[in-house]
Structures are given as C-alpha cells and as structure tokens.
Amino acid sequence: MADLSNFSITRLWPAANADVIQLYSLPTPNGVKVSIMLEETGLAYEPHLVDITKNETWGQEYLALNPNGKIPAIIDPNGPGGKPLALFESGAILIYLAEKSGRFLSADPATRYETIQWVMFQMAAIGPMFGQLGFFHKFAGAAYEDKRPRDRYAAESKRLLGVLETRLDDREWLVGDYSIADIATLGWVRNLVGFYGASELVDYASLRNVPAWLERGLARPAVQRGLEIPKRG
Image 1 (cartoon, rainbow, N blue to C red):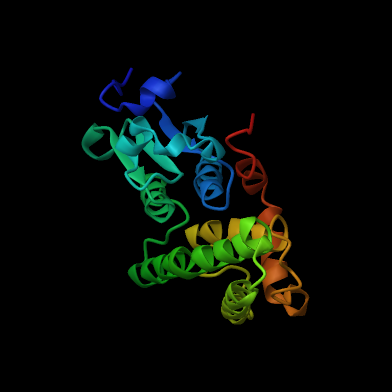
Image 2: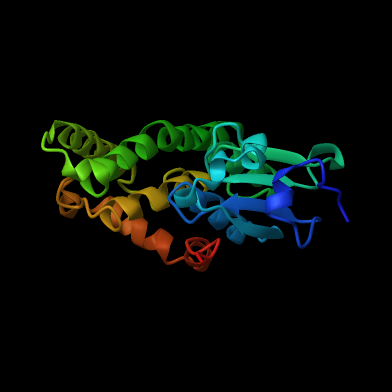
C-alpha cells in the first residue's frame, strides 16, 4: 500500500485505501467538477468531505495540501513516475485526470487547446462572476440596501451566459464531444439557476441552447452521481 504519511492532511482525513486517489472536497460547483470527472473516467478514488462551513480548509493540515484554503484538492498516490502527487485548483485537476485517463481531452493539439481555453473561461469568468452573484443575491450580500453590486454581477453573468448561448449554436457540447470544458461549467450554470435562484436576474428563460446543454449534461449518470459526492453529513 502506498505511503501517504508525508501528507499531514491524512491525519485528519485518513485514507482507507491509500492506493487510490484521495479527493478532499464538498459538493459545490467547484467541488463537483472533480467528483464528476472521477465518476466519468472510472478512476478509483476515495472521497473525504471537507466542510467549508466549519472552516476546515483553514487548518494547517489542509493548508499544507492547498495553501489557498479552497476545495477541491487531490492526492494521487500513483502520480507521474509512480510517485504521489498532490494537486489543487479544479481546472488543473481536470486536466491532470483527463491526461491520466486518456478521456475527455482530445489528443488533437488544436482541439486540446480549444478545450483548455473553455476550461479557463469557466475558471476566470463563469465561476467568479456567478459566485459573486450568488453572494449578493442569496447569501449575506442580499441584505445590502445598495443593489448596485448585485446588479453589476447579474449583468456580467447574463453576458457570460450569452457567450455560452452563442457558442452552443448548432453544437451539443462546448468543444467537439463532451469534455472537461462541459464538466467544468455544468455545475456553475446549475447552481446559478437552481441553488442561487438567479434565473430571473439573468433572463435565463430567454435562452435556448444553454438550457438544452445543461439538460443533456445533467442526464448523464456519472454527472448525477458526481453531484452528490462527497456525501454531506
């Protein structure tokens, strides 16, 4: 069995099977990217629930794995050269798992970089903007009397949905076949119109392509499973 004792996080979240990928996460839009990818690829893994509502990412054990204190993160005991590899940042993890499994990232160089481009679009734009809108519409920011911050993020989120809407004209997925670009983005759109309840703010009902794409993605069995992993207590 692999020796993960050099990773202090395993003292708080012990590995039942140290020979498989260890996932430290919570089923948030960022977290489910990795659980969906693991379910889609069939790579063996062990999920550990990291409760961000209890500030569990800010302890020294977790920070030793991810100094940015965010979920998700992984340890692959069988990384490059057969050595354990720790990774944080969901986009980087998706690329790594795609290369490890040989799935959901084309080997064709042009298609590969086009796919990574759309993953970066999600990381740099979709996630931050949708997340800020969620804060100002659903969470503590909803109590702010000044609605200009909320409206700013609503307008930008609506614009970004328009980018996706145009991209999905006459195509089922963001780049060729279903890929890590779709896996990266599905959970965020789902949360925006579901959990965040921001459909009206972004005029989601006016879209045609994005809702159809979201429905196709959510119909995938691996996506349905990944959305619930790790199980909340």
